Image (cartoon, rainbow, N blue to C red; front, side, top):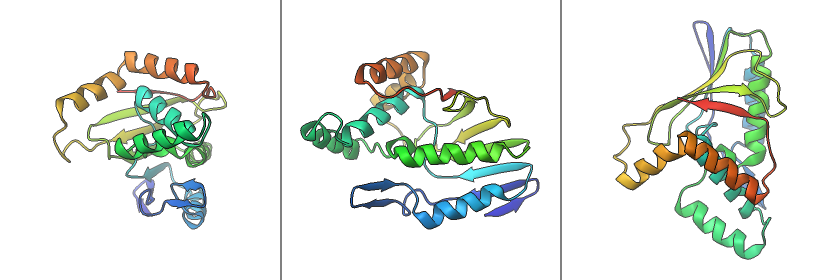
Amino acid sequence: ARDLGLARLAMVDSRDGRVLADGQRDLLDSDEWEWLEHQVKEPAPYFLLGTSLPLLLPRGLHEVERINAVACAGRWGRLVARISEELRQAAQLSHWITFPASFDRALRLLYAAGDQQRRGVIVLSGDVHFSYAAQVHTWPDGSRPVTPTHQLVSSPFSHDLQYGIAGGLRVMASRIGDFIGRLVARMAGAPASALHWTIE
């Protein structure tokens, strides 16, 4: 953690800090969660959370990964779970939403950070090989952020994406991708959430 002028920056290790044992899936271990909760309480006009993995993906990609996580957890039986796990590993579906408990906990922390009369809350991340900005409009409970809450993602220089992958990402980040993601989630019976964000 660092104080940078008006901002408090907290960096978490969302790769090597993962817990993947005895059926438990968590992006951070208990010590790091406790540390992060302490950082959120530190007074500063701006709170910055650094994590290599984006918390908020383009909606289409978010829903694909969310449904995959539900399938891997066994909602549709062992065979579907095994196939979904193979897909998860092959396609590297390993962002925050594929760790549902971690995703929900991180959102609660950002909500708490913004509830302390701050000027802004910003998540900084990369990993997805393209850049975008996201803004939270409503939290899962339907309430609006008290403090403007954004995510900035930048990782365009890691390697050239194949044309098919680049095209797929463009679709996932579009309104069509948003619609397809929501439709698939509804058809799969995934629980609805009032969480809403926009991508630029």
